[in-house]
Image (cartoon, rainbow, N blue to C red; front, top):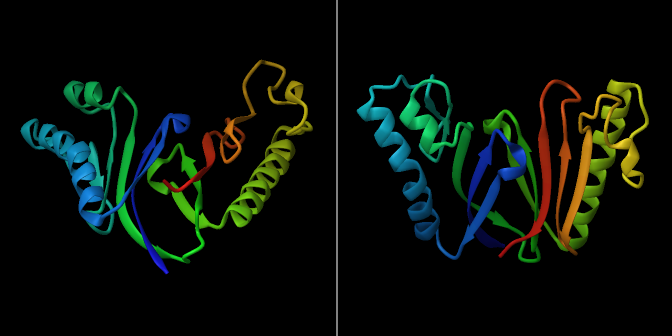
Length: 189
């Protein structure tokens, strides 16, 4: 087993979400604090209510910030809800890749770690299942291999898959159930 130290930054605009990896827990925590502390300082200074403008998870290792409560906080968040999670997880020694599911409901975002082959299989299974569900919801056939099926008649994007490199890709799903999300596959670095 090995330890993976990371910070997940999930954003309401799911395609802008990020995962950062670090050699040590301390470096991950330092990065997390550098992002979260200025936002919490604004919340404290402007006397914003917990569970409205910001909320912690069950531990202080994750925090969500919501826009619409304070102009200064909105400006720092670029008017986009954010969820920060710092974590260290033990994974099998041969885990080299991740598959992340970034939800528009930012605090429901998750990440899994796999071997390269397992990551490809998980990625493809997730994409195929979501395409099936989106096709049923919209009562149209969406195909990964035919871009002309990726939008509805009004031009709204239902699905988009972008390959940045052999093992770094995003798949975006738009408004099939009144929310959006992005799957990402990448190498742990």
